[in-house]
Structures are given as C-alpha cells and as structure tokens.
Length: 118
Length: 112
Image (cartoon, rainbow over all chains, first blue to last red; front, side):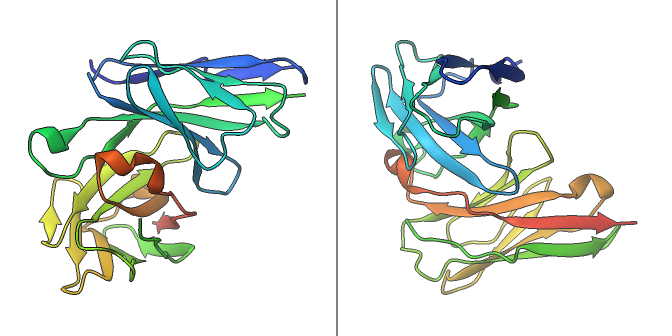
C-alpha cells in the first residue's frame, strides 16, 4: 500500500541530545513537509522540500535541520538548540499536480512521532 | 496566502448534518480552499478541496460562496467517528508550499 511512514511512534530523549525522526513515502510525491503540533494547537510548518536536494525553512525552523537526498525520504533532526522539543511531529507529502492537471493538490500525512525530551 | 477563521468548537447530533464554516475573506482568485480533519493523536486526513464551484465526494460536500470569501464543509450524516478537529486552509498551489498555515481549526463533537 502507498503511504507515509514515520518512525518511531514514540521517542524519548534526554535534554542536550540530537534526535532524528524518520519520514518515508512511497507515493512518488515531489514535496515533503514537517510540522510540529503542541497540545491543543494547530500545525506549524518547520521545513518543506519541493525537490530532491533542496528545502526551505518554514515558520519555526530554528533548532531543526533536514535533508532530502532521496525523493522518498525527508528526515528531521531535532537539535539540542531547540528550546522546547517535546511535541507531536507530523510529516506530509504532496504531488505536483500542476504539472499535469493544473488543479490544486492535497497533502497526505503520516501517523506522527511523539517526542518527549526530559 | 489568505488566512482563515473558524469557530473553535461545534456540536452536532449523530445522524444529522454537520455544517462547518470557514471565513477566508482575503482569498485571491487562484487560491484553493482545502479541508482536512485530525482525529485525536493521528495525522490529519485530507477531506476535500475546491476553487469556486461546489464540490462533493464520498466524505463530504464543500460549498463556496460566490464571492469566495467563505465556505462550508458539510458532513451529511455525522457519526461518532466524525468527532475530530477540522482545518480549513487556503493556498495557491505547489510552489507556495510554505505559505499555507493550519490554524487551530474547529473541534467538532458528534453526540449520540
């Protein structure tokens, strides 16, 4: 089945450690995204990538880093510089439908990784 | 991209239609309206999108006003499993990926 996988579902780390969250998609989508969600709040964009080897900062990129070496993978590293890393992290992808149909497009989300840093 | 305004919460009786409003008064002519929902502790799920015509799929209907300044998502026969946070967003398209935002959405509670 096609979809987006994120691993692990729950992650625990000690303060001061870097941690990498995995995101893989087999939908052949061009774009991938990382969002952060805090309790009771909406999603905030961390980074996004619209093509391999290129990515852009979102609204809250400080303390995070990403890479896009392969179309299907977009790992997110939460560095020790991130002041409040405990959160629910969501990865998403979307196709570039404008190249074909000219219509809009939708994002497909993974199940998320809940990171707890103590 | 245009910002959206949604009521923070709504209730709906099971089996009745749920009508979720969204205001996007600053929407531009080439921006689409998208709706997603997020069931507790899961990733958001795409529901429907539209530009200016009303749209319907197996999950819901989307009604966009003629001036495109607001829209309504309609779940025709709400079930308990439709209890979720519903997000309305607008965006131009692929090459403006970083400019659409998910606000706090509307928490829909379907009651028996």
